[in-house]
Length: 236
Picture 1: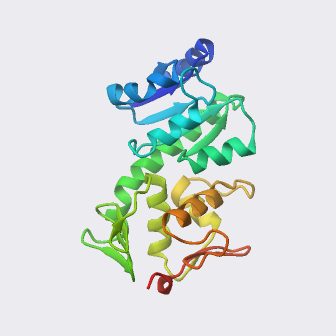
Picture 2: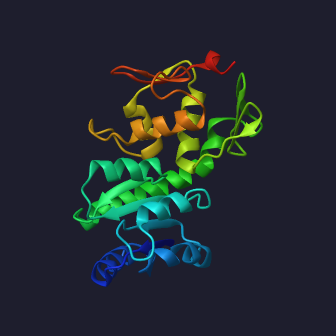
């Protein structure tokens, strides 16, 4: 049974969603205060964290930022704030998905299952994508698949699970254009709907972490109307 820590201060919403998910083989533990969430993560060791944004003690965006370096599992924002800016900021801070509370429960369940499936695939991906000893080397960039570690100029580059998966996918197809459709199917387990900009946000975040200029990228390029390209020679 998968364990979810749901940080939500409205008891009615908390119990409603927890009841629905519990009927589908998910254990939901509710924490009502943001300033207690970090301690509860250490205590209950969840597989996924579901975060509201407006919380007493500490807001969900700050929590997402603080949790990301220390929690490798999916972080999903569940909020009533239908705001592009909040969605972009959440994804920039390391959230894996942004879901509105008005989303029908079956759709919420499906999207959480996608996150669990992606997490399971991420564990298996390095072994399936390459022999256990394989490391990808592009000049000063080294990507160690089995160890899920990245170094640039000899310095470790800390990446979230989803950021590493994206880099690994691009690196395994270095020199080839990866379309959004292919990336969404491989990394998210669903088709690209033509509107979701979360992959663009993830690419932008990855560029910053790898020292690529977001305004004029040379290492991970955007190929207009086609997708993204990791340039092998750009890391020399």
